Length: 194
Image 1 (cartoon, rainbow, N blue to C red):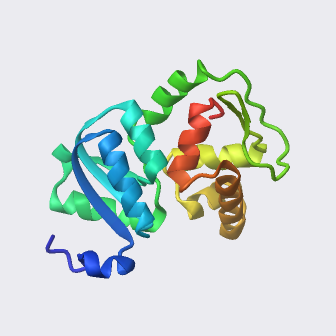
Image 2: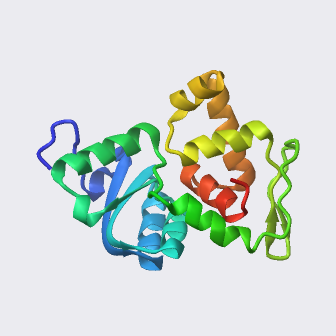
């Protein structure tokens, strides 16, 4: 890429990689399988560059571990560098409009979603419906993650310390069995909680 701040590593040095870049024609189940394999190999953040996006493919990719998306038509060297740095710095960056679309699609299938005091339980499955118990603070933190804010920005906006926000996010992700922040957002969006 010709960017001194970004070091490209090969398969032998995969344990040093902090961000993987996947280029695909479409965001679909095939791309999601590739991302899942990369996550299994231990790369914590995955940027997916594609020409075509569809909602189901985006949600499957987020569940597999994608932390950022980019349209192929926007993939200049400078823009790729920016997206890779942002993925490394703050992680989750969902495509514009995904939250609204997923919320409208997911809300129709939710029969019960109860924001209540957190009890430390995991998600409760009732048939095919997932009932989540999130506190008001947890819901607000996930809303801000969905808006693209990083940990320090969320802490500033909510007047909490960064360590408190990190703790809230860790608790949410463990309870939801989410792979990353984007996956946690996708789960609560699908359930109509944000």
